[in-house]
Image (cartoon, rainbow, N blue to C red):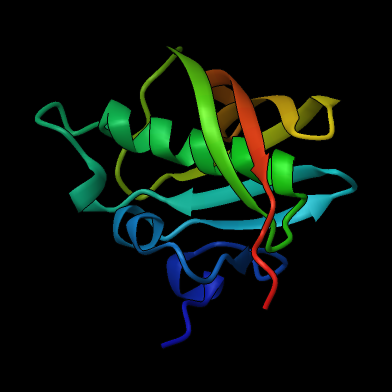
Length: 141
């Protein structure tokens, strides 16, 4: 089954990351790379909302983690794992809104990447986050 950005009101320059069932279940999430920095997108659906009809904080954190990990793997198939992730909630997001992520690599080491991102709805920042991501060597095939 192909997950297409246009089916979720996401611009077609974004693409779907294949292979993460949790992200597909929560999102789906989409991305493209702007140099070494990812840009991500996700359309808020009813199942993403809490009792206050705003996006559940855990959903926003999962989307931020997705964006931060893309900083580490550069949008490629390199496996990565989050070591630590810090998030600050700034404003709510609501059903049908398009949440955009802007990731930035702070420092890339051989095995560790430091990154940060902000999630926005239009120009309204809804969450800022930073992470330490471990690069994992993929097994030979």
